[in-house]
Length: 156
Picture 1: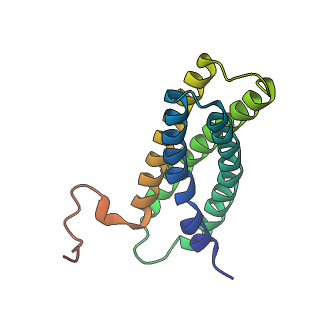
Picture 2: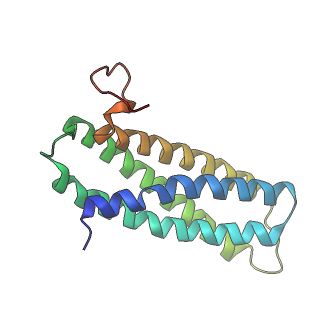
């Protein structure tokens, strides 16, 4: 069975890449006035919100398994974990908004433009938060991304 740190590293890319992909798809659906695609994207947002639960759980479990390992920069764990919690809450809010939209605007109702703009705005915020969370997570072990760190050699 893979360790919790390994599971977290496997899963943590899903929200950051997934929210970016869904943002692009939803933006296209809004510009094309494709209500079916907008609603399908809302379903995928809800699924992404559920997947993000697994990312948070594996991240919480991974903390104990990486502390004390060579190369781990422990002072970077807490900032990552704190912002990850905020990003998780934002993703769950987005998922709740998507679910609410699907319930309120069931067939034959179309999603109104104000709801699409609200959803796009939340998606932009959540995607930015997910990317920043990933950046902070990278600083835990991937110290080559830290500015001013000249002690690490990068293979060319």
